[in-house]
Length: 393
Ligand SMILES: Cc1ncc(COP(=O)(O)O)c(C=O)c1O
Image 1 (spheres, protein in one colour):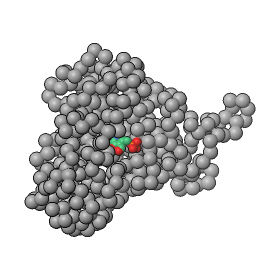
Image 2 (image 1 turned 180 degrees about the vertical axis):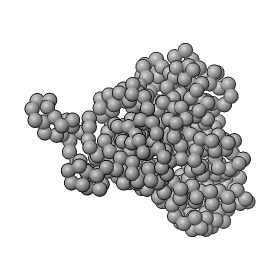
Image 3 (image 1 turned 90 degrees about the vertical axis):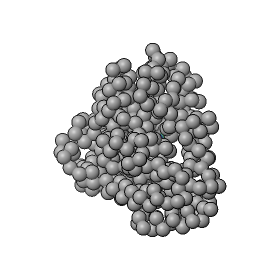
Image 4 (image 1 turned 45 degrees about the vertical axis):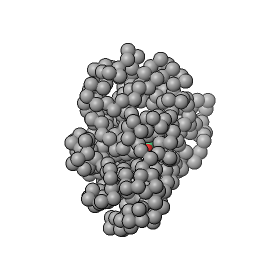
């Protein structure tokens, strides 16, 4: 809804997380934003209201969340946030900016649900997608006369590939395309796509932003008034809005986002350092590794490298299954970015909807496992991984 508070630029990430849109309630002084659990608002006369008419259109708890995500994604330049009932609701709404007959270029390794939506739903409405690894010369090769949008996810899910937001945004803007970045894996604490040139940063706030595996939600932030107006129109028209309670849970999670991200990163770095020399690990993906092909770009566009690690171990899929079952602290579950550690098997879980051919082409193998490193004590997590690796043979 609203934009930036002027003093939100020159402060640390934890301070910003605690204070983003955290104004006390005007009527009561309540420190936390109340949960306005209402569908409608009494009007003084026909169409004479307080600014709130109906909760699909506006809700004060949602306002606070929308302001908070705008401040987090764009602390120094005015931006506009819109909250949604899920990350997918945010994504589907953004693509409704396009006309039928348009074309999207998307990173080939991206969340399976996004690809499923592009391929199986959006295509029915005449919007086609070309997938690309977006390497040198690739953008030109994929360009069509009807291309209108570049869709990036960085780091990607699940391979943690990195895309250069600044360079790709500049190239896309030369062609007049809208650049969207799915910022779910980094969170706005580690990466701010709008500062790097993207037009829209969207996120599944189900993950790091809310952070406690207790809510499904998403958001869209843009600095463009024109795009914001269209998104707000679509948000109200399509109606995939979050409930007031879900908005509150997001706000509650946001207060610790800064400090949680530091801990996720500390723990992931601790574990990666040990995995890197472990004899059973046959493939290790983490953008903080100097050997990662996207390391330099990640270092330039992210504050730190995040809490996600993907790896393969000896024994392929069977070894991966034994590892996951032997772990006591990494629960087998979909999702990521919460306080507790989770292990996921992209092949059969999050990316099962991606055609097998594309999975294999990009490197999502049956042996790949994805760790979402939580905020437990690093030594405990490593002890657990170490014993699970031993049990994986
Ligand atoms: C990168 C990414 N984007 C979008 C989504 C979809 O979000 P949601 O599950 O909140 O609809 C996910 C879900 O895992 C994701 O990982």
